[in-house]
Amino acid sequence: MELGEQLEIRVVKDVILRRKKHNDVEGDIGLTGHQLVFSRRSGSPRGTTTDDRDGFLEVLISNMWQITEKPSSTPPSLSIRLRDMRSISLLFPSAENQEMHKVAKSIGKINELTNPRLAYPFYYHPNVDFARESGWSLFSIDEEFDRMCCPPNKWRISSVNLEYAVCPSYPGRCIVPMEIDDETLIKVSKFRQSGRFPVLSYYHPSKETSIMRSGEPLVGPANRRSKEDERLLKASLTTGKRGFIMDVRSTQKAQQRQSRGGGIEIEAHYPHWRRVHCTVEHKLSVLQESFVKVVDACCDKSGSSGTWLSKLRSSMWLSHVTDVLVAACKVAQSIERDGSSVLIHDTHGFDTTIQVASLTQVLLDPFCRTIQGFKILIEREWISSGHPFGDRCGQIGFNRANEAPIFLLFLDCVWQVMQQFPLAFEFNETFLRLLFENTSSSAYGTFIGNNERQRNELDLSRSTFSVWTHFASSSVTQQITNPIYESHSSVLWPSVAPQSIVLWSGLFLRWEGGPEPLTDFAEEVQQVGTKHLRMKESVLGLKEELRRLEDEVQQKLTEISEGVE
Image 1 (cartoon, rainbow, N blue to C red):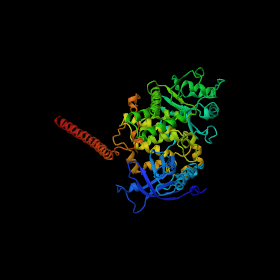
Image 2: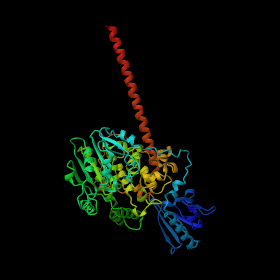
Image 3: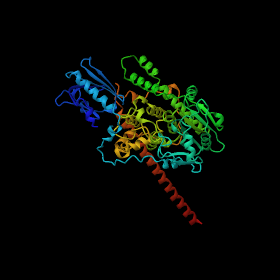
Image 4: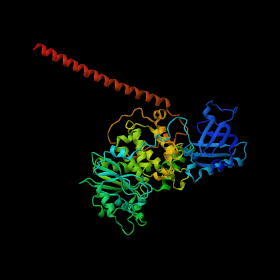
């Protein structure tokens, strides 16, 4: 299929582009199979600015979230809300409504394509010179096994799912307890929702505790049990230790699932484990509605501050952020302070479960707070472990009915922790924002698809470029680096009090009116950070020189003493 066949119109002249913080500009729009391009016509008025950026705009069609035709407005207009939370309007003062309708219909047809290979990353070729395979080898389960210091007599890497037959959403290789063989894993997979048997997410070497994650047990109304599942969980514990099963659903919702074939672990069958519930919203429609409401509140400038605050509160977005933070803090406390291992699960084990498990590692592990470590965390816990980015982020060729801001909610939680511990992260909020933007509409193939099996079928490593290569470029690295970062090994214990959780204004309000980004201030902070590092290096050099002089003095004193004798 040729993408051009989906276009009912390719060029419309005499269109006005309207954007917040920009002047209206008259020009022409052109549609391609992947982009809408606006350019100011030569000789057309610039408005009150001479900035060329006001006269040119490129938008990926996959970035278009909501399109509203307004044929009755004066002039007729097309209102477009983008997935990166921008809003633009195209006004058609001299064109017929039919042309506006054709533009909207063409965009809709492209966004409804069912073949993911027609997405932009499969056609993108960067201007910079780097190998296509660069970035795809960022994560290695063998290297992570060694980095986490997993004792080889306690844990092993299993290839039971190498053909994705045991669990379609899991990666081909997973870390599991050493004494559990592959045959047992197959039996356990039949007792866990979506085949997601318990696998290692994080190992704490000094505490000898672990975080595991899985799908819910398929107990059902008949109170089924699996001795293999019970043996696996027992094998994950160090001798003499106990563990917690954290169900991130309410007790009521978990029990309701039991009547439908799912359910909860029966504690009598898991004597070394205690089950606890920590409610985190996992219903996709509720989370999506919350996201839409908070975006609407941030875009609405018509009401008073009281009305705005009321809309923000009714969106429940900050409540959802708080719930995830609370759950992660409880898991971190079990690992770090109680010395207990934790198994986390919701229903399917690839949404809320991954949110909590990965955020906990950000709190516990300083490596996950570095740029490299955070990238590996996302590869291991989100991409490799089967979070369905294709469905949740509304990508071309996937099920947009299951769209929900699961990954964004995680990024928001990380941002909240960064506000409370600004020196503890090597990256800044720009990094988090760029990650969010690249999940739904991107030139790169890193986040395409729902699981490893689909990504292999699409041959992404050979057909697309990795976003990690983009982030590794010197220009982007400078943008995403925190200049006041100081590495330390402390566990982070963020406040989850209501007054500590605030709206991520750098994401939700960045396209709205108000002051421009503090570029000069950021550059000044960068300079201060560089000067600080140079001073530290100078101090270390002076200390080394002082030690050398002390050694020389001591040697002279020894020689004098020996001469006197």
